[in-house]
Image (cartoon, rainbow, N blue to C red):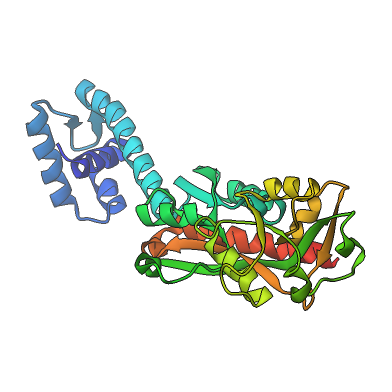
Length: 306
Protein backbone atom coordinates (compact mmCIF):
# COMPACT_ATOMS: atom_id res chain seq x y z
CA UNK A 1 0.00 0.00 0.00
CA UNK A 2 1.48 3.31 -1.10
CA UNK A 3 0.78 6.85 0.06
CA UNK A 4 -0.12 7.69 -3.54
CA UNK A 5 -2.81 5.01 -3.49
CA UNK A 6 -4.18 6.34 -0.21
CA UNK A 7 -4.42 9.84 -1.70
CA UNK A 8 -6.26 8.46 -4.74
CA UNK A 9 -8.60 6.53 -2.45
CA UNK A 10 -9.30 9.60 -0.27
CA UNK A 11 -10.16 11.73 -3.29
CA UNK A 12 -12.78 9.20 -4.42
CA UNK A 13 -14.00 8.65 -0.85
CA UNK A 14 -14.48 12.39 -0.34
CA UNK A 15 -16.10 13.06 -3.71
CA UNK A 16 -17.96 9.73 -4.08
CA UNK A 17 -17.55 10.32 -7.79
CA UNK A 18 -14.67 9.01 -9.93
CA UNK A 19 -14.89 11.86 -12.44
CA UNK A 20 -14.77 14.65 -9.87
CA UNK A 21 -12.00 12.84 -7.94
CA UNK A 22 -9.94 12.53 -11.14
CA UNK A 23 -10.29 16.26 -11.85
CA UNK A 24 -9.28 17.04 -8.26
CA UNK A 25 -6.19 14.88 -8.73
CA UNK A 26 -5.44 16.43 -12.16
CA UNK A 27 -5.57 13.06 -13.89
CA UNK A 28 -7.93 11.19 -16.18
CA UNK A 29 -10.56 8.81 -14.80
CA UNK A 30 -9.37 5.45 -16.25
CA UNK A 31 -5.95 5.45 -14.49
CA UNK A 32 -7.69 6.42 -11.26
CA UNK A 33 -10.08 3.50 -11.56
CA UNK A 34 -7.12 1.20 -12.21
CA UNK A 35 -5.34 2.39 -9.05
CA UNK A 36 -8.43 1.96 -6.88
CA UNK A 37 -8.88 -1.54 -8.29
CA UNK A 38 -5.28 -2.41 -7.40
CA UNK A 39 -5.79 -1.11 -3.87
CA UNK A 40 -8.93 -3.19 -3.43
CA UNK A 41 -7.11 -6.30 -4.62
CA UNK A 42 -4.27 -5.56 -2.21
CA UNK A 43 -6.53 -5.21 0.84
CA UNK A 44 -8.68 -8.12 -0.31
CA UNK A 45 -12.01 -6.30 0.05
CA UNK A 46 -14.12 -3.93 -2.05
CA UNK A 47 -13.86 -0.38 -0.80
CA UNK A 48 -16.66 1.10 -2.92
CA UNK A 49 -20.09 -0.01 -4.02
CA UNK A 50 -20.40 1.15 -7.60
CA UNK A 51 -23.61 1.57 -9.57
CA UNK A 52 -24.51 3.48 -12.70
CA UNK A 53 -25.98 6.23 -10.54
CA UNK A 54 -23.71 6.58 -7.53
CA UNK A 55 -20.62 5.48 -5.65
CA UNK A 56 -20.74 4.68 -1.93
CA UNK A 57 -18.24 3.44 0.59
CA UNK A 58 -18.42 -0.11 1.87
CA UNK A 59 -17.89 -0.70 5.64
CA UNK A 60 -14.25 -1.54 4.87
CA UNK A 61 -14.01 1.64 2.81
CA UNK A 62 -15.36 3.77 5.66
CA UNK A 63 -12.81 2.21 8.04
CA UNK A 64 -9.97 2.85 5.60
CA UNK A 65 -11.17 6.42 5.05
CA UNK A 66 -10.88 7.13 8.77
CA UNK A 67 -7.46 5.51 9.07
CA UNK A 68 -6.11 6.97 5.83
CA UNK A 69 -7.12 10.51 6.79
CA UNK A 70 -5.11 10.25 10.00
CA UNK A 71 -2.13 8.74 8.17
CA UNK A 72 -2.09 11.41 5.45
CA UNK A 73 -2.57 14.23 7.96
CA UNK A 74 0.41 12.90 9.93
CA UNK A 75 2.51 12.63 6.76
CA UNK A 76 1.62 16.22 5.83
CA UNK A 77 2.51 17.37 9.34
CA UNK A 78 5.90 15.66 9.11
CA UNK A 79 6.56 17.28 5.73
CA UNK A 80 5.73 20.69 7.20
CA UNK A 81 8.03 20.04 10.15
CA UNK A 82 10.86 19.00 7.82
CA UNK A 83 10.38 22.16 5.76
CA UNK A 84 10.57 24.15 9.00
CA UNK A 85 13.90 22.48 9.78
CA UNK A 86 15.21 23.32 6.32
CA UNK A 87 13.98 26.92 6.57
CA UNK A 88 15.38 27.37 10.08
CA UNK A 89 12.08 27.63 11.95
CA UNK A 90 12.65 24.46 13.97
CA UNK A 91 15.70 22.73 15.39
CA UNK A 92 18.35 23.77 17.85
CA UNK A 93 21.24 26.21 18.08
CA UNK A 94 24.15 26.31 20.51
CA UNK A 95 25.71 29.76 20.81
CA UNK A 96 28.75 30.78 22.81
CA UNK A 97 29.36 34.27 24.12
CA UNK A 98 31.95 36.26 26.03
CA UNK A 99 30.74 37.68 29.34
CA UNK A 100 30.98 41.29 28.14
CA UNK A 101 28.23 40.58 25.58
CA UNK A 102 25.82 40.43 28.52
CA UNK A 103 26.04 44.22 28.82
CA UNK A 104 25.51 45.05 25.14
CA UNK A 105 23.70 42.97 22.51
CA UNK A 106 23.02 39.62 24.15
CA UNK A 107 19.76 40.35 26.03
CA UNK A 108 18.09 41.82 22.94
CA UNK A 109 19.47 39.04 20.73
CA UNK A 110 17.84 36.42 22.94
CA UNK A 111 14.51 38.26 22.89
CA UNK A 112 14.56 38.74 19.11
CA UNK A 113 15.65 35.22 18.29
CA UNK A 114 13.11 33.55 20.55
CA UNK A 115 10.32 35.69 19.12
CA UNK A 116 11.35 34.98 15.52
CA UNK A 117 12.31 31.31 15.96
CA UNK A 118 10.11 30.17 18.83
CA UNK A 119 10.43 26.49 17.88
CA UNK A 120 14.24 26.55 17.86
CA UNK A 121 15.84 25.40 21.11
CA UNK A 122 18.49 28.04 21.90
CA UNK A 123 21.32 27.01 24.20
CA UNK A 124 23.64 29.80 25.39
CA UNK A 125 27.09 28.91 26.71
CA UNK A 126 29.34 31.50 28.43
CA UNK A 127 32.89 30.94 27.16
CA UNK A 128 36.04 32.91 26.52
CA UNK A 129 36.90 33.67 22.90
CA UNK A 130 39.61 31.02 22.85
CA UNK A 131 37.24 28.38 24.20
CA UNK A 132 34.65 29.31 21.59
CA UNK A 133 37.18 29.02 18.77
CA UNK A 134 38.08 25.50 19.91
CA UNK A 135 34.43 24.46 20.16
CA UNK A 136 33.55 25.97 16.79
CA UNK A 137 36.29 23.82 15.28
CA UNK A 138 35.18 20.60 16.99
CA UNK A 139 31.51 21.16 16.10
CA UNK A 140 30.11 21.50 19.62
CA UNK A 141 29.24 25.15 19.00
CA UNK A 142 27.20 26.49 16.07
CA UNK A 143 28.03 30.16 16.42
CA UNK A 144 30.15 32.25 18.79
CA UNK A 145 30.17 35.84 19.97
CA UNK A 146 33.87 36.55 20.46
CA UNK A 147 35.86 39.64 21.37
CA UNK A 148 37.94 41.05 18.48
CA UNK A 149 39.37 39.26 15.48
CA UNK A 150 41.45 36.27 16.47
CA UNK A 151 44.83 35.62 14.83
CA UNK A 152 45.07 33.49 11.70
CA UNK A 153 48.26 31.71 12.77
CA UNK A 154 46.19 28.65 13.70
CA UNK A 155 45.92 26.55 10.50
CA UNK A 156 42.35 25.65 11.45
CA UNK A 157 41.25 29.26 11.83
CA UNK A 158 40.69 29.55 8.09
CA UNK A 159 37.69 27.27 8.61
CA UNK A 160 35.91 30.02 10.55
CA UNK A 161 34.22 33.14 9.25
CA UNK A 162 33.87 36.27 11.40
CA UNK A 163 31.96 39.51 11.06
CA UNK A 164 31.79 42.58 13.27
CA UNK A 165 28.53 42.88 15.18
CA UNK A 166 29.11 45.73 17.62
CA UNK A 167 31.91 48.20 18.35
CA UNK A 168 32.54 50.16 21.54
CA UNK A 169 35.33 52.25 23.01
CA UNK A 170 38.13 50.89 25.14
CA UNK A 171 38.46 52.38 28.61
CA UNK A 172 40.85 52.01 31.50
CA UNK A 173 39.50 51.22 34.96
CA UNK A 174 41.43 52.45 38.01
CA UNK A 175 40.63 52.91 41.70
CA UNK A 176 39.32 56.39 42.55
CA UNK A 177 42.42 56.83 44.66
CA UNK A 178 44.67 56.40 41.62
CA UNK A 179 46.41 59.52 40.18
CA UNK A 180 44.77 58.86 36.76
CA UNK A 181 41.25 58.77 38.20
CA UNK A 182 40.64 62.48 37.64
CA UNK A 183 41.76 62.48 34.00
CA UNK A 184 39.31 62.86 31.11
CA UNK A 185 41.40 60.48 29.00
CA UNK A 186 44.54 58.41 29.37
CA UNK A 187 47.30 58.02 26.77
CA UNK A 188 49.02 54.79 25.83
CA UNK A 189 52.29 56.11 27.29
CA UNK A 190 50.63 56.66 30.67
CA UNK A 191 49.29 53.10 30.66
CA UNK A 192 52.84 51.74 30.36
CA UNK A 193 53.65 53.06 33.84
CA UNK A 194 50.69 51.29 35.50
CA UNK A 195 50.56 47.65 36.70
CA UNK A 196 47.77 45.95 34.76
CA UNK A 197 45.14 43.31 35.41
CA UNK A 198 45.03 41.55 32.04
CA UNK A 199 43.78 38.43 30.26
CA UNK A 200 45.75 35.35 29.18
CA UNK A 201 46.22 35.41 25.43
CA UNK A 202 45.33 31.71 25.11
CA UNK A 203 41.76 32.48 26.22
CA UNK A 204 41.26 35.95 24.71
CA UNK A 205 43.65 36.09 21.74
CA UNK A 206 41.83 38.72 19.70
CA UNK A 207 41.24 41.04 22.62
CA UNK A 208 44.78 40.79 24.00
CA UNK A 209 46.22 41.48 20.55
CA UNK A 210 43.86 44.44 20.14
CA UNK A 211 44.97 45.98 23.45
CA UNK A 212 48.63 45.53 22.52
CA UNK A 213 47.91 47.12 19.13
CA UNK A 214 46.22 50.14 20.73
CA UNK A 215 49.05 50.60 23.21
CA UNK A 216 51.74 50.03 20.58
CA UNK A 217 53.22 47.21 22.62
CA UNK A 218 54.96 44.01 21.72
CA UNK A 219 53.63 40.92 23.52
CA UNK A 220 55.19 40.74 26.98
CA UNK A 221 55.90 44.46 27.24
CA UNK A 222 52.90 45.25 29.48
CA UNK A 223 53.43 45.36 33.25
CA UNK A 224 51.04 42.58 34.23
CA UNK A 225 50.19 42.38 37.91
CA UNK A 226 47.53 39.68 37.53
CA UNK A 227 45.87 37.65 34.76
CA UNK A 228 42.15 36.86 35.01
CA UNK A 229 39.52 35.19 32.86
CA UNK A 230 36.42 37.36 33.41
CA UNK A 231 36.02 41.13 33.49
CA UNK A 232 34.09 40.88 36.76
CA UNK A 233 37.21 39.36 38.32
CA UNK A 234 39.32 42.08 36.75
CA UNK A 235 37.15 44.72 38.39
CA UNK A 236 37.56 43.01 41.74
CA UNK A 237 41.34 43.21 41.47
CA UNK A 238 41.14 46.85 40.33
CA UNK A 239 38.94 47.71 43.33
CA UNK A 240 41.49 45.98 45.57
CA UNK A 241 44.26 48.19 44.21
CA UNK A 242 46.16 45.38 42.46
CA UNK A 243 46.31 47.31 39.18
CA UNK A 244 44.36 48.96 36.39
CA UNK A 245 42.53 47.13 33.60
CA UNK A 246 41.59 47.99 30.03
CA UNK A 247 38.04 46.90 29.29
CA UNK A 248 35.14 47.59 26.88
CA UNK A 249 33.17 50.73 27.78
CA UNK A 250 30.02 48.71 28.52
CA UNK A 251 31.75 47.78 31.78
CA UNK A 252 30.36 51.06 33.14
CA UNK A 253 27.13 49.16 33.82
CA UNK A 254 28.78 46.97 36.45
CA UNK A 255 31.67 48.97 37.94
CA UNK A 256 31.44 49.57 41.70
CA UNK A 257 31.52 53.18 42.99
CA UNK A 258 35.17 52.76 44.02
CA UNK A 259 36.35 52.50 40.40
CA UNK A 260 36.85 55.30 37.87
CA UNK A 261 36.30 54.58 34.16
CA UNK A 262 38.37 56.72 31.78
CA UNK A 263 38.44 56.62 27.95
CA UNK A 264 41.72 55.96 26.19
CA UNK A 265 43.11 58.79 24.09
CA UNK A 266 42.10 58.60 20.45
CA UNK A 267 38.94 56.63 21.27
CA UNK A 268 40.20 53.21 20.10
CA UNK A 269 37.50 50.56 19.89
CA UNK A 270 37.00 46.87 20.53
CA UNK A 271 34.60 44.68 18.57
CA UNK A 272 32.16 41.94 19.36
CA UNK A 273 32.30 39.53 16.44
CA UNK A 274 30.09 36.68 15.30
CA UNK A 275 32.17 33.62 14.44
CA UNK A 276 30.89 30.54 12.66
CA UNK A 277 32.30 27.63 10.68
CA UNK A 278 32.40 28.05 6.92
CA UNK A 279 30.25 24.92 6.67
CA UNK A 280 27.51 26.88 8.47
CA UNK A 281 26.82 28.85 5.27
CA UNK A 282 23.79 26.65 4.66
CA UNK A 283 22.66 26.69 8.29
CA UNK A 284 19.60 28.92 8.13
CA UNK A 285 19.17 28.87 11.92
CA UNK A 286 22.72 30.18 12.38
CA UNK A 287 22.07 32.87 9.75
CA UNK A 288 18.88 33.90 11.57
CA UNK A 289 20.78 34.22 14.86
CA UNK A 290 23.45 36.41 13.26
CA UNK A 291 20.73 38.57 11.70
CA UNK A 292 19.30 39.04 15.20
CA UNK A 293 22.77 40.02 16.43
CA UNK A 294 22.98 42.80 13.85
CA UNK A 295 19.43 43.97 14.56
CA UNK A 296 20.15 44.06 18.31
CA UNK A 297 23.36 46.03 17.69
CA UNK A 298 21.50 48.55 15.53
CA UNK A 299 18.82 48.97 18.20
CA UNK A 300 21.49 49.47 20.88
CA UNK A 301 23.33 52.06 18.79
CA UNK A 302 20.08 53.92 18.07
CA UNK A 303 19.19 53.96 21.77
CA UNK A 304 22.59 55.38 22.71
CA UNK A 305 22.25 58.19 20.19
CA UNK A 306 18.64 59.00 21.07
